[in-house]
Length: 442
Ligand code: UD1
Image 1: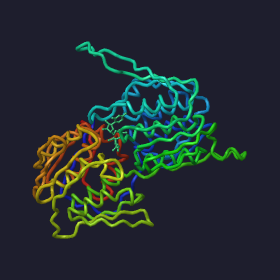
Image 2 (image 1 turned 90 degrees about the vertical axis):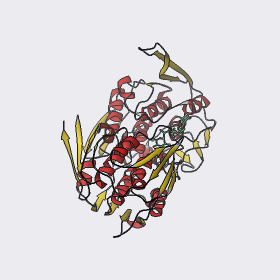
Image 3 (image 1 turned 180 degrees about the horizontal axis):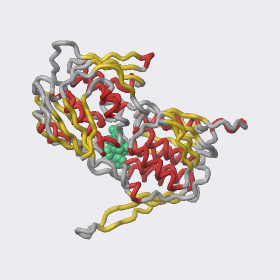
Image 4 (image 1 turned 120 degrees about the vertical axis):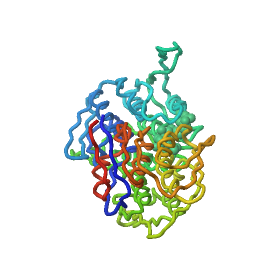
């Protein structure tokens, strides 16, 4: 059980580099099950969700070689299993992508209900709607609570003799269901259309990866995706070439946004490298409303965040929405900047109802925040002070790290395994731009 210890109050300054996107790699790793050739993935972040995904792949029979830091050769040619081990599935939300990928690969799949951060109820009805539309039967396996004997759905089992293309109209804009619909339709017979899709960068990345390997997916990044089913995904091996193709995971929008807010909240001057600036547009807009200077250097994939001397931050309103709106995954981090911004700010959370566990932790550090029915009201304070706090979930953890960097005094953060699910080498990266942050064993 390690903890992070931060001596706050130092403006961050210099150059920091973003890793590959967590939300993308957790779908692309399961997608390798659909390939008929090995593949090399680059820019794979060193985070615990990736380790879990790799363990699941290995348990199914995949051969995985780590070629260098962040570079893996994956071959799923001899995968015979279709059941995701329960203890691994329960460790992360994205384990449900193995359902879509295994269904697409072999017409059957079984996985325990996903774990990961608790942000509210996590229904999968839209995923099931997509699987069913393509011809799969699903069976929800009920378990009983040991304490009260109440039943709950513990696992999902899917089977299909054959997958047929269909028209899928999602009732809710869901990243997970859009990803799973793509994974299960990519090899189905005929042309599938998916309406009311999510448009996040990681959906585009999954489609780009599959297309690079031979799929025919168009419209990713819009509300309607069309998939012409293909029989095989062999990359360029169709032409007889034996070269293993290499795909690089898209940069992490949320890690980049987290560094942007850390730079601003510490009144720093930081160049964030390896980003796709247009993915950060809405985050940058809200930060600029607070008085932060955000400059996108498009051709060089850099965002420069800087706070001019004497700048007073002022509050603004933030509403989380599916992409291209303000990401729910940036809401806790943004709250730290708002906590340091003069006047009143309002946050409306429209994706997850239970995304405010960080509020109690920020209050311990001197923030003035009240919860409302679907959000929070924040009154800015001149500064925060260090405290002993918890990383309540992944992005709540990022928020208390930023708060600790901006606060006067010492902040100690426990439960940092949440942070390690999604941030690669966060201590080393922040230290490289002047943060006084250490990881110590308790
Ligand atoms: C969501 C976020 C994603 C973020 C992730 C972790 C959106 C659209 N999605 O993705 O950006 O990285 O959380 O914080 O912002 N829903 C249903 N039925 C379903 C599936 C989802 O009703 O079958 C609802 C959920 O309850 C939620 C909303 O749809 O309110 C979005 O869920 P979804 O996008 O599927 O969640 P994630 O894929 O986890």
